[in-house]
Amino acid sequence: MEKRFFLKGFVYLSLIYFCAYFFGINAQIVGFVDIRNSLLGFSMLAFVVFALSYTPLWIGKNALGCLICISILCFVVDLFCYANFSSNLSIPMCYALFETTLQESWEFLGLYLNVKTLFLIALFFAMSFVYYRLSFSFVGKKTYGVFVAISLIGMINWVVECHKLFFVNGHPYYTHQNLAYFEPLRIGMNSFYTIDTKEKTKAEFDSQLTSLKQTLKAQLRKNPIQNIVLLLGESAQRGHMQLYGYSKPTSPYMIGLQKTKNLLVFDDVVSPHAQTSLSIPKIFTLANYENEAQKPWYQRATLISFFENVGYQTYWISNQEPASYITPAGMLGSICDDALFVSAYKQFHDGELLPHIEKTLRGGGMQKRFLSIHLIGSHNTYGDRYPAGYGIFEAISSDEKTRKKALYDNAMLYNDNILNEIFKLFSQSDSIVVYLSDHGEEVYEIDDFVGHGDDHITRFTCEIPMLIYVSDIFIQKHPKIYEKLKASVHRPYMSDDLIHTVLDIAGIQTPNFDPTRSIINDQFNEKRRRIVGGSNGKDYDIQLKGQEAKYR
Image (cartoon, rainbow, N blue to C red; front, top):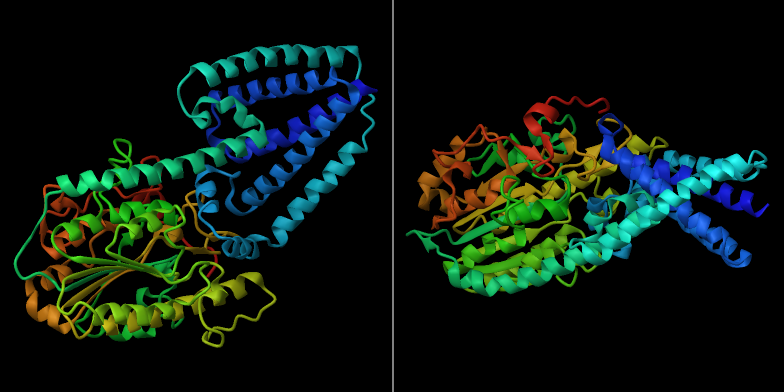
């Protein structure tokens, strides 16, 4: 009877671990290593259950019961991720998870806990109930003998894994891939890797700042620009902007500005990632997919460091999480001369930033300023991104897709208003404002997916708007730069090269500058491959650009 209990538990755990393991693998690219690791993990699980069956009965049963309960909880998490992102809980998801506040977590659940997800979870529990109603009468000596043999193989594998743990250098996530079959251990290893990496990133980022300031070489040309602004949006897909041909009036202010000489609209720009924490480092530093394997982003020069080096006062004004959170945005903001994080939990609308920007412009007289302004934009949940009663698109519908599209379009409409108000603040000074989004957003264009992430890269999660606003005074004082900007609006571009473009605009001369990466430079390389998602990601022009929206 006891043998049946333990064998039944082993088969149940094997089934859910098998499903969870292959959630994270594209069925079309499963290779020998993936199959080998799953089989090794399977044998190691057998040894664990076999060992429990030879402990005192109450200990063995309770221990196995706890393992099953923990595994069920982990499987529900993986099932949730798979239903929405076609992947189990991956490291990019862990990075996003550990950068969110409690409020964001509730918003995330509200966005993705849909009927489809609830149905799959309910189906899992129903199938589990049916499974445990089975009698398992087929357990005999031969069956148990096979189980014992597999357990002995598993014992050998455990010895190998323990040897790796104590005698092989390397991070557990990389040195214990066999354990990825154990769903709770895989989630634990991913979480530990993420937390450990974030802490090390912050420590190394802080330690290299002093040496970077001493070694950084940069000079500023004559006739500098007074105000240079990098206005970073959030989750804005250009396909939902009227300015880029969308059928709904989501950008009336930008449409009006486009008719003037002050707004330049770049129409072929993509982000390097579909995730904030991965895009921002490549927007603000010299990191890109070509060099990311050589040295991490936090050991590279930042746009902020260059401006500080040539005498600009640097500001970070954000409506996202404060610097106390270990995020790339928080770390970059912390090195500015003046950093203001308006919202602790992303609870404010972007209109809250306007008086703080105005106050910054009033102070300091004619000093040179570099401002980084970080919007909350159209980040989920969309209905919380604009004031009550602001939207013009009807968001009351029984159809989930129709409702969320309307909420997103309202958020984009409010974003258009915020851009216009910010541009106004800089209209009476020598100013240039570069606006772009950190990444795009998919709103049911391909299938039942809404959101973004490097685990779900499509054309719509990386196609972003890029607008450059210039004041009349800027045009008068810097006519050559203005002409270069006008001539470059149709060039293919990826925002991990933005640092080179901004250095070129600002006239900051440094050995780190690469003219082939500046969109306004005569040497700009229009044939550069645009790989989204890192060096092993997707080629935008070959794999993504031709994707057509199934639903609009």
